[in-house]
Image 1 (cartoon, rainbow, N blue to C red):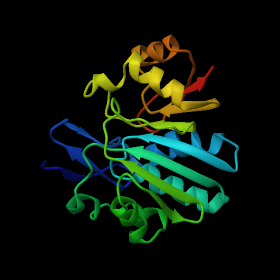
Image 2 (image 1 turned 45 degrees about the horizontal axis):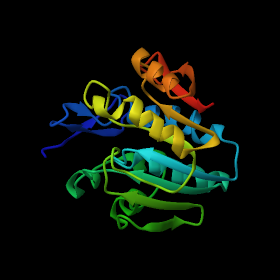
Image 3 (image 1 turned 180 degrees about the vertical axis):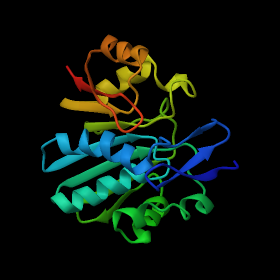
Length: 218
Protein backbone atom coordinates (compact mmCIF):
# COMPACT_ATOMS: atom_id res chain seq x y z
CA UNK A 1 0.00 0.00 0.00
CA UNK A 2 1.67 3.22 -1.16
CA UNK A 3 -0.10 5.72 1.08
CA UNK A 4 0.79 9.37 0.74
CA UNK A 5 0.83 12.02 3.49
CA UNK A 6 -1.09 15.13 2.37
CA UNK A 7 -1.68 18.50 4.02
CA UNK A 8 -5.28 19.68 4.43
CA UNK A 9 -6.49 23.27 4.54
CA UNK A 10 -6.15 23.70 8.32
CA UNK A 11 -2.50 22.64 8.16
CA UNK A 12 -3.14 19.16 9.56
CA UNK A 13 -2.11 16.00 7.77
CA UNK A 14 -4.25 13.32 6.25
CA UNK A 15 -3.39 10.17 4.33
CA UNK A 16 -4.30 9.47 0.72
CA UNK A 17 -5.09 5.81 0.15
CA UNK A 18 -4.45 4.92 -3.52
CA UNK A 19 -6.35 1.63 -3.33
CA UNK A 20 -9.55 3.42 -2.29
CA UNK A 21 -8.54 6.59 -4.18
CA UNK A 22 -9.63 8.74 -1.25
CA UNK A 23 -8.11 10.60 1.68
CA UNK A 24 -8.91 9.68 5.27
CA UNK A 25 -10.20 13.21 5.96
CA UNK A 26 -11.68 16.23 4.25
CA UNK A 27 -9.23 18.32 2.23
CA UNK A 28 -10.77 21.33 4.01
CA UNK A 29 -9.11 20.31 7.28
CA UNK A 30 -8.62 16.97 9.03
CA UNK A 31 -8.65 18.34 12.57
CA UNK A 32 -11.39 20.89 11.86
CA UNK A 33 -13.61 18.15 10.41
CA UNK A 34 -12.99 15.68 13.25
CA UNK A 35 -13.54 18.33 15.93
CA UNK A 36 -16.81 19.46 14.35
CA UNK A 37 -18.35 16.08 13.53
CA UNK A 38 -17.15 13.81 16.32
CA UNK A 39 -16.24 16.08 19.25
CA UNK A 40 -18.62 19.05 19.02
CA UNK A 41 -21.61 17.08 17.72
CA UNK A 42 -20.71 13.71 19.25
CA UNK A 43 -18.67 13.55 22.45
CA UNK A 44 -19.80 16.95 23.77
CA UNK A 45 -23.52 16.22 23.26
CA UNK A 46 -23.71 13.13 25.44
CA UNK A 47 -23.78 14.94 28.80
CA UNK A 48 -22.53 11.95 30.79
CA UNK A 49 -19.60 11.39 33.14
CA UNK A 50 -18.86 7.99 31.63
CA UNK A 51 -19.11 7.09 27.95
CA UNK A 52 -18.85 3.98 25.81
CA UNK A 53 -17.84 5.05 22.31
CA UNK A 54 -17.55 2.89 19.18
CA UNK A 55 -15.55 4.26 16.26
CA UNK A 56 -16.01 2.77 12.81
CA UNK A 57 -12.57 3.05 11.22
CA UNK A 58 -9.57 3.77 13.48
CA UNK A 59 -7.57 5.06 10.51
CA UNK A 60 -5.04 7.73 11.49
CA UNK A 61 -6.12 7.67 15.13
CA UNK A 62 -7.22 11.32 15.02
CA UNK A 63 -10.72 10.79 16.43
CA UNK A 64 -9.36 8.68 19.29
CA UNK A 65 -6.64 11.27 19.97
CA UNK A 66 -9.08 14.18 20.16
CA UNK A 67 -11.50 12.17 22.30
CA UNK A 68 -8.74 11.17 24.71
CA UNK A 69 -7.65 14.80 25.01
CA UNK A 70 -11.21 15.97 25.64
CA UNK A 71 -11.83 13.20 28.18
CA UNK A 72 -8.83 14.38 30.17
CA UNK A 73 -9.89 18.03 29.96
CA UNK A 74 -13.46 17.28 31.08
CA UNK A 75 -12.64 14.43 33.52
CA UNK A 76 -15.01 12.12 31.64
CA UNK A 77 -14.29 8.38 31.68
CA UNK A 78 -14.29 6.96 28.16
CA UNK A 79 -14.32 3.31 27.14
CA UNK A 80 -13.33 3.57 23.48
CA UNK A 81 -13.78 0.69 21.05
CA UNK A 82 -12.58 0.89 17.47
CA UNK A 83 -11.92 -1.37 14.52
CA UNK A 84 -9.56 -1.33 11.55
CA UNK A 85 -8.91 -4.20 9.19
CA UNK A 86 -5.96 -2.44 7.53
CA UNK A 87 -4.01 -0.49 10.17
CA UNK A 88 -2.03 2.52 8.98
CA UNK A 89 1.67 1.54 8.62
CA UNK A 90 4.17 2.89 11.11
CA UNK A 91 6.01 4.83 8.41
CA UNK A 92 2.79 6.80 7.89
CA UNK A 93 1.43 7.38 11.40
CA UNK A 94 4.81 8.50 12.75
CA UNK A 95 4.78 11.38 10.24
CA UNK A 96 1.36 12.79 11.20
CA UNK A 97 1.40 16.26 12.77
CA UNK A 98 -1.83 16.15 14.79
CA UNK A 99 -0.16 16.36 18.21
CA UNK A 100 1.87 19.42 17.20
CA UNK A 101 -1.31 21.28 16.29
CA UNK A 102 -3.40 20.40 19.36
CA UNK A 103 -0.69 20.78 21.99
CA UNK A 104 0.08 17.16 22.90
CA UNK A 105 3.29 15.15 22.99
CA UNK A 106 4.01 13.01 19.92
CA UNK A 107 3.78 9.89 22.10
CA UNK A 108 0.07 10.55 22.62
CA UNK A 109 -0.62 9.49 19.04
CA UNK A 110 2.06 6.82 18.86
CA UNK A 111 0.66 5.10 21.96
CA UNK A 112 -2.77 4.82 20.34
CA UNK A 113 -1.31 3.08 17.31
CA UNK A 114 1.15 0.89 19.17
CA UNK A 115 -1.05 -0.53 21.92
CA UNK A 116 -1.87 -4.22 21.38
CA UNK A 117 -4.83 -5.21 19.24
CA UNK A 118 -7.70 -7.27 20.67
CA UNK A 119 -6.88 -6.08 24.20
CA UNK A 120 -8.25 -3.46 26.54
CA UNK A 121 -5.51 -0.90 27.22
CA UNK A 122 -5.62 2.01 29.63
CA UNK A 123 -4.14 5.04 27.85
CA UNK A 124 -4.63 7.41 30.80
CA UNK A 125 -6.85 7.64 33.87
CA UNK A 126 -9.86 8.68 31.79
CA UNK A 127 -9.38 6.84 28.48
CA UNK A 128 -9.33 3.10 27.82
CA UNK A 129 -8.77 1.83 24.27
CA UNK A 130 -9.90 -1.45 22.75
CA UNK A 131 -8.80 -1.94 19.13
CA UNK A 132 -10.08 -4.76 16.95
CA UNK A 133 -8.36 -5.78 13.71
CA UNK A 134 -11.65 -6.51 11.99
CA UNK A 135 -13.91 -5.27 9.25
CA UNK A 136 -17.30 -3.84 10.11
CA UNK A 137 -19.28 -6.75 8.70
CA UNK A 138 -17.54 -9.25 11.01
CA UNK A 139 -17.09 -7.06 14.08
CA UNK A 140 -18.91 -8.13 17.24
CA UNK A 141 -19.19 -6.61 20.70
CA UNK A 142 -21.21 -7.26 23.84
CA UNK A 143 -20.89 -3.59 24.85
CA UNK A 144 -23.76 -1.14 24.46
CA UNK A 145 -22.56 2.25 23.28
CA UNK A 146 -23.56 5.83 24.04
CA UNK A 147 -22.07 7.17 20.80
CA UNK A 148 -20.99 5.71 17.49
CA UNK A 149 -18.48 7.66 15.41
CA UNK A 150 -19.30 6.42 11.91
CA UNK A 151 -16.14 7.41 10.00
CA UNK A 152 -15.90 4.86 7.21
CA UNK A 153 -14.74 5.78 3.72
CA UNK A 154 -17.46 7.37 1.61
CA UNK A 155 -20.50 5.46 0.26
CA UNK A 156 -19.08 5.84 -3.26
CA UNK A 157 -15.86 4.07 -2.25
CA UNK A 158 -17.20 1.50 0.23
CA UNK A 159 -20.95 1.11 -0.42
CA UNK A 160 -21.04 -2.17 1.51
CA UNK A 161 -20.52 -0.22 4.76
CA UNK A 162 -23.56 2.04 4.30
CA UNK A 163 -26.31 -0.56 3.98
CA UNK A 164 -29.48 -1.30 5.90
CA UNK A 165 -27.84 -4.40 7.40
CA UNK A 166 -24.93 -2.35 8.74
CA UNK A 167 -27.10 0.44 10.17
CA UNK A 168 -29.38 -2.09 11.85
CA UNK A 169 -26.27 -3.51 13.50
CA UNK A 170 -25.29 0.00 14.62
CA UNK A 171 -28.80 0.63 15.95
CA UNK A 172 -28.65 -2.53 18.03
CA UNK A 173 -25.23 -1.63 19.46
CA UNK A 174 -26.51 1.66 20.89
CA UNK A 175 -28.02 2.21 24.30
CA UNK A 176 -31.63 3.40 24.31
CA UNK A 177 -30.51 7.04 24.52
CA UNK A 178 -27.53 6.52 22.22
CA UNK A 179 -26.78 8.14 18.89
CA UNK A 180 -24.56 7.92 15.82
CA UNK A 181 -22.74 10.79 14.13
CA UNK A 182 -21.20 10.87 10.66
CA UNK A 183 -19.80 13.38 8.21
CA UNK A 184 -22.04 11.93 5.48
CA UNK A 185 -25.36 13.62 4.73
CA UNK A 186 -26.38 11.91 1.50
CA UNK A 187 -30.10 11.40 1.07
CA UNK A 188 -29.81 7.69 0.40
CA UNK A 189 -27.79 7.20 3.61
CA UNK A 190 -30.33 9.13 5.71
CA UNK A 191 -33.19 7.14 4.20
CA UNK A 192 -31.37 3.90 5.02
CA UNK A 193 -30.89 5.03 8.63
CA UNK A 194 -34.59 5.92 8.92
CA UNK A 195 -35.55 2.51 7.53
CA UNK A 196 -33.93 0.72 10.49
CA UNK A 197 -35.53 3.02 13.09
CA UNK A 198 -33.17 5.95 13.56
CA UNK A 199 -34.47 9.46 14.13
CA UNK A 200 -32.26 11.32 11.64
CA UNK A 201 -31.24 14.94 12.10
CA UNK A 202 -29.30 17.07 9.60
CA UNK A 203 -26.79 19.39 11.27
CA UNK A 204 -24.52 22.10 9.91
CA UNK A 205 -21.47 20.46 8.39
CA UNK A 206 -17.77 21.19 8.83
CA UNK A 207 -15.96 23.48 6.37
CA UNK A 208 -16.56 22.33 2.81
CA UNK A 209 -19.74 20.42 3.65
CA UNK A 210 -23.21 21.92 3.97
CA UNK A 211 -24.48 19.24 6.34
CA UNK A 212 -23.55 16.27 8.52
CA UNK A 213 -25.83 13.69 10.15
CA UNK A 214 -26.81 12.68 13.65
CA UNK A 215 -28.97 9.58 14.06
CA UNK A 216 -30.69 9.08 17.42
CA UNK A 217 -31.88 5.67 18.52
CA UNK A 218 -35.64 6.05 18.42
